[in-house]
Image 1 (cartoon, rainbow, N blue to C red):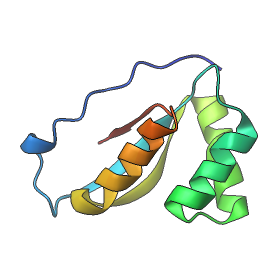
Image 2 (image 1 turned 45 degrees about the horizontal axis):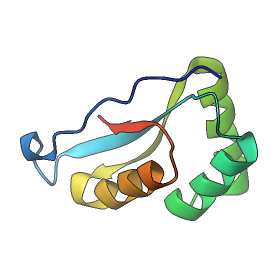
Image 3 (image 1 turned 120 degrees about the vertical axis):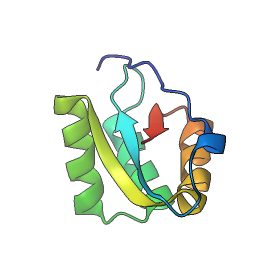
Length: 90
């Protein structure tokens, strides 16, 4: 896995109700099992959905894993950062 540079999120430039998505990026240090577990716990993915997203991240370098208004995505994004996952809100 290749480490992707994390894009900074400037929350002040985004309207709270504007639809956004969290994009998860590939990296060199998180295991498949850890990413799958995180997607299930943090994004409420099913096992199949989490596995699919993890494979997309692995092969394509990134995958949108959750969408919604910014106020819903902020806590998810922060938890990804707390778990050392590389993500951005776009």
